[in-house]
Image (cartoon, rainbow, N blue to C red; front, side):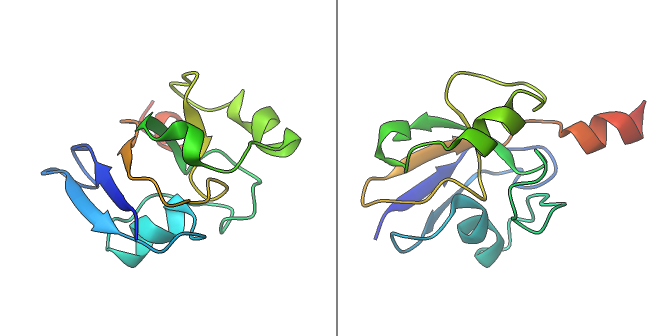
Length: 112
C-alpha cells in the first residue's frame, strides 16, 4: 500500500502527515479518508481546480492526465509542471510526496 507524505499546510495539515491508501484510490479520496479536508467543490467530477496538488515525488507513478484535467489545470492557482487535480490522480504502488497549495482559486477570490 503506497504512503502519501503530505507537506505541512497552514490550515489543512499544519504538521504535515503520512497516510496509507490502496492503489487505485485518488489522492483526493485518500486525503479525505484521513481527515485532511482538501477542498473539492465539484465533488471530484473533474469540473474545477479546488483539489489541485503539487506532486513533489512519485509524479510519474500516477495515471496519465487526460485532456479535461490538462485544460482545468491551466486555471489552477500556483500551477507547476508536476501539478495534478487530486480527484483525478490515481495512486499506483509508489509512495508520493504531495504539497497542497496555500490557496485555491475559490479561496483567493473569497479573501480578496
